[in-house]
Amino acid sequence: MSRLSEVLDRLSATIEARKGGDPSVSYTAKLLNDPALAAKKLGEEAVETVIAAVAQGPDALAAESADLLYHWLALMAASGVSLDAVAEKLEAREGTSGIAEKAARKPQ
Image 1 (tube, rainbow, N blue to C red):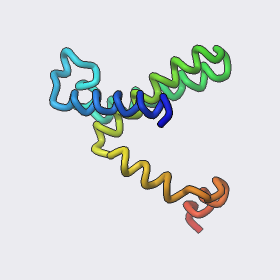
Image 2 (tube, helix red, strand yellow):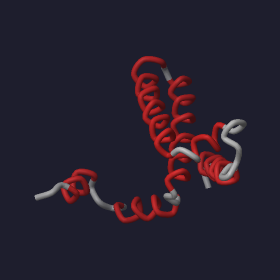
Image 3 (cartoon, helix red, strand yellow):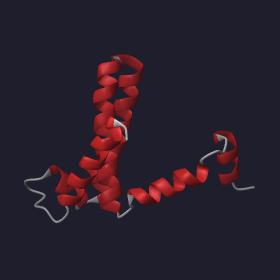
Image 4 (cartoon, rainbow, N blue to C red):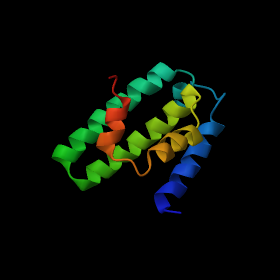
């Protein structure tokens, strides 16, 4: 198991443990109680990650990527989407060209 996957497993467990928490004292609980807010914050972090990639260098990109992953995990939990469901979608695409996979999703 990679170091990143181990950290993401721990972070995911922490996020799950915050469900039902007090949003006034836990930012994670606040996101979990409001999927629209979690989605908005993920979008903001995605933009910040792109900016870091283009203009700020590797350290900033790593920091913004950490924020992006946290907010993505929070959105999945807030929306009731399991990481296993995401893994299932990725597994279904394994061995398929990205171009072919996108073409298969386009309406004919």
